[in-house]
Image 1 (cartoon, rainbow over the protein chains, first blue to last red):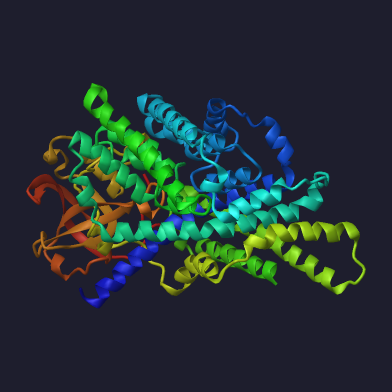
Image 2: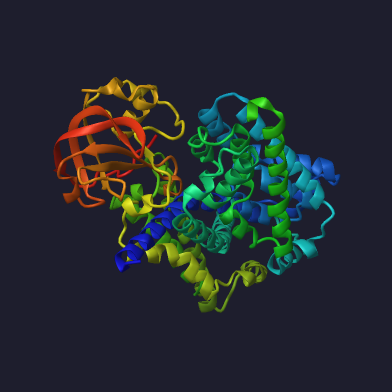
Length: 308
Length: 256
């Protein structure tokens, strides 16, 4: 390969990397700010009073919490981590982490704008909710020791110390909240950078035609769209418009799999999970939604005429 | 000062995003619909930086003064245990600064002919349904851009239906082994969110001197359509009457 071509390829790689980063970074910052203010102004006791103990109720609540915290898949990670440090029950956080990037007003609106009130919008909401609920239930049995990174566990212990100090005033607390938000951002941004680098490298090196060639097969097209969602790593607030661009090539069932799976897991959110969870649990968090979304997509392709 | 350093990182991120807005390269990366988010992020980074710098001063003041407010002291000790895990490691610092470093070192450039190599190119029609825009479809022939024309072609099964219609279009030149000496592809990227979802579109242009045009050169083509074929598929082809080299537009991508 001539040197100029390598240089131009590298420039393409940098452009795509910066594109993903610049698009995602406002959302990560917003999530970090929410997290910083939770850290300073939300008392652990308050959270524990409202958090349900019963696993099914907890998972249901977690899957619906995006309606109150409208975050995408970048912003949801620091918020979830902070809530866990404050003692949030396991199933609530997992269901929130997976569902919130879709079950929130902003994404519902953008999906409506792209697809209208149709089976695609309802399917996306219902199946995202179901998968998040199920994975949340499965995680109900996991202990914090085997789930979180040592750093997060240490923070949980610090937060669990009795704290008699009154809630700080807004003037006192805001600089602290901002610094906590900054710390969260700096912690998570490195995973966002690694994820964006990987996604940009995949896009520069792997020809799209290899994925698109399998678009016609009902089963393989579901796999292809899920891989595409994973590689593209687009923000959930806008991925509906991107999915729209594939409606001619791919089956509706595979578009639905793209819309359900992409916001839960993609390259950059997976690397960000590593800042909260131990590697084995990250693997579960990727593989469980992936297999459930795959099952859903393949089942619809093979059995429901309208989705073929 | 650790807080001071973190504050500087935040300031440099704010500066980096702000400079993308002011030097116009922001649209090399994202759809202009989302520019306000970048603007808010600049403000957000700036405010967080202020928070860090304020705390850096607070700590310095505390070291300076011998008489400390008891409450503040206790407060600080408590916070210190919080801060413990937040030492920004050197690797972490480099990773967070990587976008700024790459953005400043590598000259900013939008996607071009090289990036078309491993993407699906929609030639002469859209390979997929894009959101129909009634407002754009109503545009007169002179105002239509490349994407508008391809959408118009999608609405008709007969490539000869547009014979004789005139168009004036801007795009960059793309050529590969499928093009003879007298034709090239006039191309643009369509970006719905950021360059991660960029889709190249193209229109075949007939021009006797096509082989003299370099790839990635931006041109303005005036001509009329005539049914033709490319890669074994029939489609409307633009017969060029005049080709003018032109500067890259401020917004190199088209937004659906």
